[in-house]
Image 1: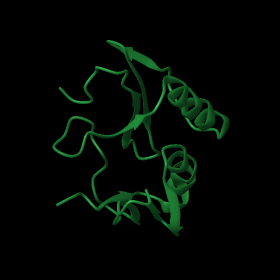
Image 2: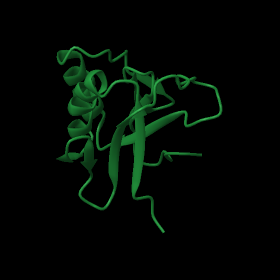
Image 3: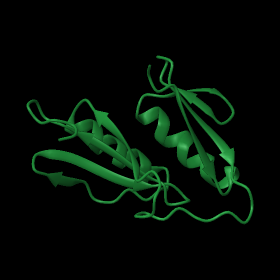
Image 4: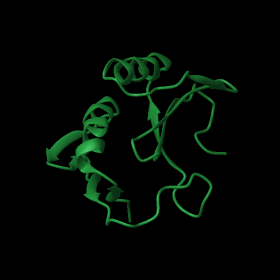
Length: 126
């Protein structure tokens, strides 16, 4: 079995979709239809409106902590940071985590994304 989709509930599709419309093409996804993106290999992101009155995302609460994407080069990570900043979104400084080049960002609801380059010989998850 393989993972085929992730559904992300956002507090406002109107506020969140511009963020994803910029980020997802930068990490290799194409828009299939409104609020649905694919990697072209059977995996999809789907975005839906959260129900009013539900609780907000909490970083260290019991939930998904972040989504991580692996970039092919350090320069690719840097280009994503630049593109997101140019589009008006916050993209903090890139971090060096023991040779791994990592960019950590948050969507308008605080959902976290990591885009990292792992040099040869460095494992994605140890």
